[in-house]
Image (tube, rainbow, N blue to C red):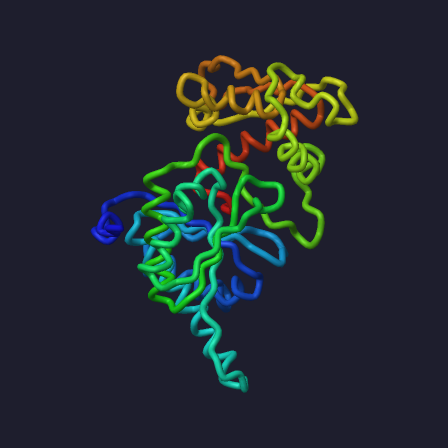
Length: 303
């Protein structure tokens, strides 16, 4: 596979999501954020770290390919450094490899594995890294984890090749991003219903999609119809509507809620959005709108 596309620094903008344990994240952030600040400055990549006192956190790298891989190499060096320092007082004879987990939309995993596993075998052989694509999706999401282990150079090479495949086969449909669960319960919009609506979102994918607000028939205990209003800046409304209304229709279908976007009001920089349906379908519609907005404003995890 020719990774010249990426090496040549063709100004493709990439987003890589890494799933890490809290301890590893602490080491990447560094004392008073020194370490991550240095990575941001030296690489030029945007590095977002998901909030929350979770045992796991998501690190999102976004930017042009050359900046991303610079940041990525710095993260791997840091993890390698941590392994070295933990080995100094250890009697273990063999040194553990650097292990990383990428989080990718499940809809892209097929291209990554290839027919009969040929693509992933090619990546393993040409990079020397061990690569494992999880069979199941991460909880309450439509993403899967890819575990990569090996020496820093082979991991970097392996991620480059994975990125080439992902650029060639973009994700299909709506991706519900994996969000690590905090140790304490999160207070989220729509009455803290996130875990419930995540479960509903996952159940919904196994049901034929219906129109109108019947999407959750039999799934929600309180089917009374209510409505909820949101205010969305004019310059972001486009990412929710999508080309010829494709995105808003997708959100309507997945959530089962009715969504009306008011016409622009002269002199106002915002648009009124009214969501009508059961409590669960409103929550899910809000969640999906939030995902679109987060993607548009610089990735998940940015506050």
